[in-house]
Length: 113
Picture 1: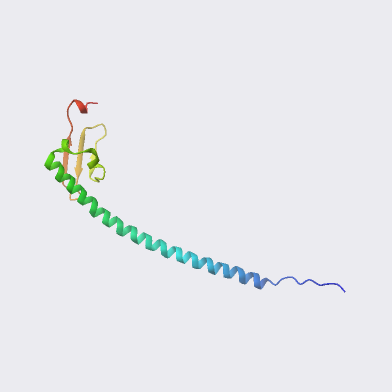
Picture 2 (picture 1 turned 90 degrees about the vertical axis):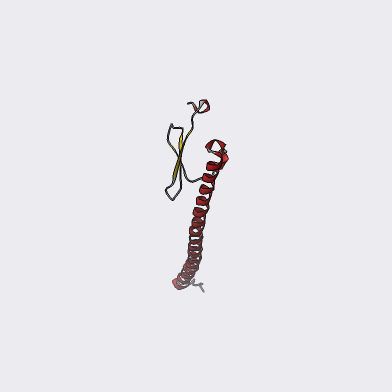
């Protein structure tokens, strides 16, 4: 007698693929949720940084008023977000978000081009 082979039904394969899609969709939803939380946390951190930067800028201005621009170390400007420098210029402008500006021009032989 001959042995008759039965071809597999398509339904179990279809169900396997549907189950895999469902699992992958769950993983995507988890990742989307985590990404939403990360974006929210980033927004909160940016708000806090803005306040800290403005406070740093104010404190830097206070130091400049106390010791003059010449008495300020370069490192003190490292975290300042209120500095503008004209290209090819010895003039520096510090601007607070309030719109208050201070302009300093460096002169002397050590600043010659």
